[in-house]
Image (tube, rainbow, N blue to C red; front, side, top):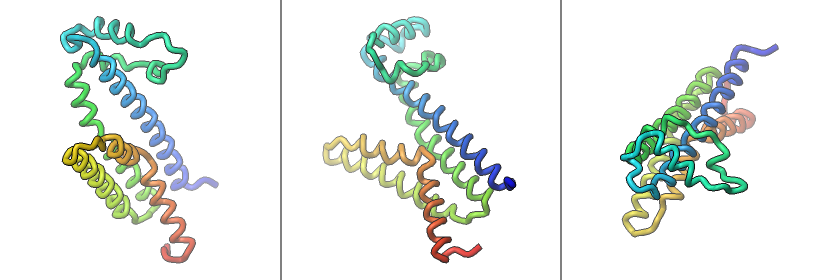
Length: 178
């Protein structure tokens, strides 16, 4: 028989994965528009319809284009390049916060008191990402890709899965009593 804890945990994970898929589609679309709009002279001064036409004309007719295999979110055409950049930078900590809160909620549903471990992962991961990027800027090395990968990890279900794995191992070894 399915307990309420298991039911709500599974439901939460499915909602969480759905959010991750939506997040990924939004990030792909913003990055695609930033990439393509950078070669369009006066993109920010164009009206929405003209922006859409210009972007579509640059898409090309490749056999497979990862960006174009997904549907664009039309509301992004209302944003200028500057606004898309701001959105991208605001979305980064927002996505991390949402994934962190999903993890905390999963722990609460199951009565697991490992929220501090998750906080440690997020704070240390984000700090490492910022320090890596700042170090790269300071010494003139492009460290954005590495920094971005760390942040990408934090914008996923993976940190929580590692804590769950840690919990299960420690419980099996008798270090955690219920």
